[in-house]
Image 1 (tube, rainbow, N blue to C red):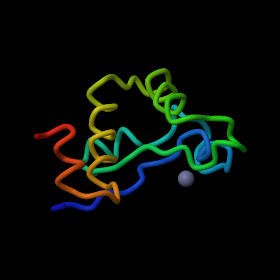
Image 2 (cartoon, protein in one colour):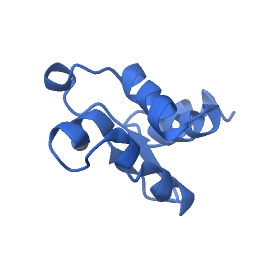
Image 3 (tube, protein in one colour):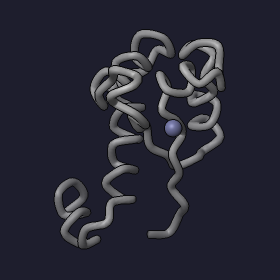
Length: 94
Ligand SMILES: [Zn+2]
């Protein structure tokens, strides 16, 4: 892997813990716009009552995400996985 992938955030958890005042105020779009390679995560599904799907939908609703952003963070997550690299990449990039 030729780049660093980091968690851009766990939007609902980041709001619940007071890091940002709302999902709309989350800086994830700015981070993506400057070219950061990152993922979106749930952090604590039990305490925040979220799923990976609901976190992505929250970004669609509050930060105007579309398939472009969802695909980018999903492909980054595949790149960052722990499994065999050639097997992971063969699932989406041949
Ligand atoms: Zn987190």
